Length: 127
Image 1 (spheres, helix red, strand yellow):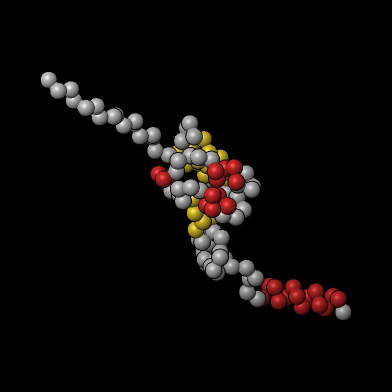
Image 2 (tube, rainbow, N blue to C red):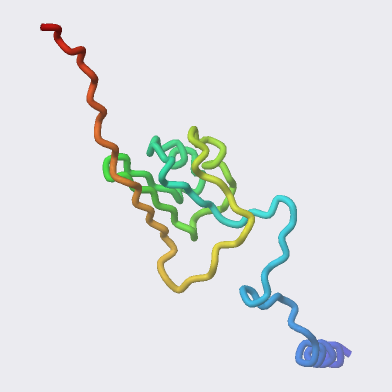
């Protein structure tokens, strides 16, 4: 009897539809609360490091001196904690999944160079 059950299941698997979606050719269905991937608007970042300190999986690295931000996509669990603690709201979680890649899993983002310091206006001396 177990042999008949096994043959029946094998034939159903061979002749039936696949059990999984053909992602990314067929996009995955999104539901409310779907966690896709973390995105940063680097031009708004002040490199405070709050996201790095609160990242539970230690996937984010911030270097204030070099003005860089990087995330290891394989370590990130997309909990959204980094977005919650960001004082400038420059990190957010998009519901779309990150596209598949054969490249490195670490995404490195270089920020713009720091703005030059503003010169203070000195009052003109009267003659």
